[in-house]
Length: 494
View (cartoon, rainbow, N blue to C red):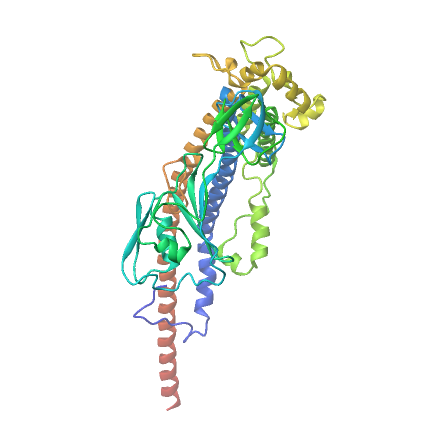
């Protein structure tokens, strides 16, 4: 607030509470500014509510997009009758329906060397394995041993040497193990230890590469559908199915690879449920009436309220902000029609969602009250996926070149509807915040409101300054009159 020469005369001469009077006067003057701030707040709330709807559009579009591709309908699921022997995994897009009989006679194993048991309680970190710098080699990779080396540092050096060997130490028995990282008969552990450091410090026999206990690597031996196969690893892939061998078996294990019907039921169900959620939430916004007794709070009003009171008030003030919004109404109508219209070009009886057990409530009145929400007969949907998978695929994915919207499958047409809806909303609400505005319609509206608010704030400063000048002038005049009155009284008294 402005003052005169840095000093305000607040009722010194008149006895009036000048600050309180001006504050009351400014409360009236601020009324247009409060209206602008309330209008800005309503605009921000409205944009936020639009964005909630846009999130629903995007979620449904993502699910529709997942139903547009034929490959997503052709995925398979695989299962093993005994996961302790073999586990399986389907490789999406390449698995073919099939049945396999697997008997695991032998698992692939790594080559292993075990040192002598040297007893428990060995200090792996005790320095000074040798008095000079020497080295040994494992699979041709040199490992240096110095006067400061410890058993642990040597083990660490073996593991990071690139020799494709894993070194570990059994503290209970004081035994070193070397295991090849590769499995199969060709896996090797070749040791060159001319100085005998491995023999003397780790219990391994020296330069000939022999060890106290040496176990050569083994290939896996598997009978697949009666055919014996050997392989260096415990995993392999066939017809898009990855097999992971876990144990041997005395009898065959069955692996079934079949079309993932339940997976598609789940995806279609999720699509329908998301559409129903969109109807519920958007319809709720469209039907919610405005509570005109509650407007956005001013800063002064918030100061007199608790956080809970502010929250409750603003919840009511936000009500009906999208009441009967024509743009949102249009999108719901478009989506409902897209779901109800048949897919041209498909056989009669197989060209609507009812063919796969999806439709509105059977009772017309209930369908009207539900605003077009869809219901699923899961068993009918599952039966269609099993008995006529190509028909189900076409119902969702058909997209002839240059075709009209009515020739598009349901996933295709719904995605197209939502692309248009999201694009229209983006033009209206943009992506900017109230502090970082874009060129959308509501962004421009908020920018205009900000300009008017700034101008109004400047005007109020000018008005408040004028009030203080006027009251200051009044105080000076009263003070002057008081001085003159005192002088006259003094003269008359003399």
